[in-house]
Length: 594
Image 1 (tube, rainbow, N blue to C red):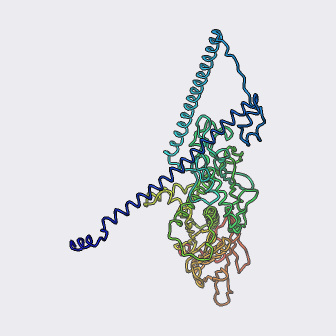
Image 2: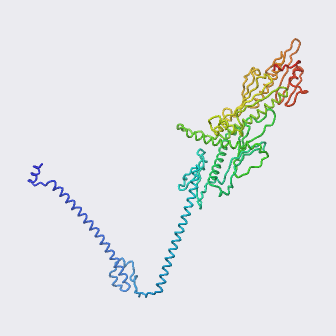
Image 3: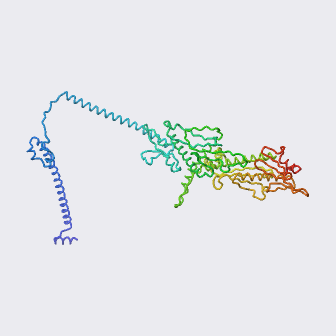
């Protein structure tokens, strides 16, 4: 490398360091030239500005002198000034300065002090007004936020309004309510001039509640309680939480009546109707006529939506107020159960996507009510019927009793039954109450027969106003000796069919009682008749028994005589069934074999 550098120096070729220095010098020269050009441009700009200002000053002085020396002034005026301003438009005068007056100076000083004091006073007043306004705003905001925090601490959800981000609101509605009621469950919390929170929701001022009435033959005999509320026109003395409770209760009551109105359209086949915004629910949805020939009680449950401040109408009889109140509480519990079911369905894994629309669901509120009303009505009919048969058989001279075992409590006692069930199991009282309201209802009854005496008639009543029963279903179990050609267990969808079959079985029981008491006598099932063929020249004899219409008719086939017994009314001469049969057949009635 050293030899190469020595050779390069001898040959006169430039070295690398010299090339770098030349390049740097060229760059410095170039940047210096650019700086000079920029400085020249800036200097020319400032010179132009100064020249413009000098021309403006010259035009001003020329215009001022044009009043006294117009010709001389026109020589120095610019062409633009000559065209835009006429000559002599600007002039000046010389005034002699007045001598200073001490009185005027003192007055000027007083005026200046007065103006300064006035300005200072105005400033102080403004500051005091601002401080007063700030104090008022602080108190207003403190009062407002204290009330908002008290509402939030008591468990209410406070959030921003969807369409008014700068305002707060309280959510008192139910998350599982239908869309039209879920949107109404949010009210704005606005502040008045003193910072008191105003609930921006008309539900608090227009409180309504569901009222239940019980009517019999057009007369109101029971009515549910209407919760006492304050005057809706004067809500100034009502605290905020009470207003929120009132709005929530009103929204719940309106949703309850709305859901019942929708459900009533599906229950017209069961006699549920809506007349003048009042839902009519019958207590009897199956039979409309009494098989015993007596008038059935015409009882209906009336449900409507009334203002909370409305006083209860005068009723002639308050004997069924507890029933109306129990129905009202049951309806509210069933709506809460509907919300819980919706939450459970929403928390489950959704079904696969499909083009088919999901089925429209309805709340089950009136249907469980119908279930209980129908079961209690059917059970009352069955009890009355068995009581009439007991009286009838006792009139005949038989010591007959009936018993009823019901696992379905009435609506008035369903809360006590639910509490007892919750103590026996691990479920809560509310769950036990809902299960009692929505489950099928069953009751059992027995009726002792004249024959066979050790095998009574067994009745089983099951009610479920839904598939597959759609009402009350009766199941009757009879002794096999009374139905040799038919099954001893029979189901009846109508009470009248049950009554007809029981009458036939009672007739057969009385016939078997005769056949068992007298040797040689045989019971004929089809005709409910006991007969004997006789011996030799004796002709055939028979005794027929018919039960129905609240009476028992015994027919003597030999003489053609009829003997009749009714409830509380004995036969001819007050004779019993056994005494009459003993007269017809001859001999003593062997009751020990019956």
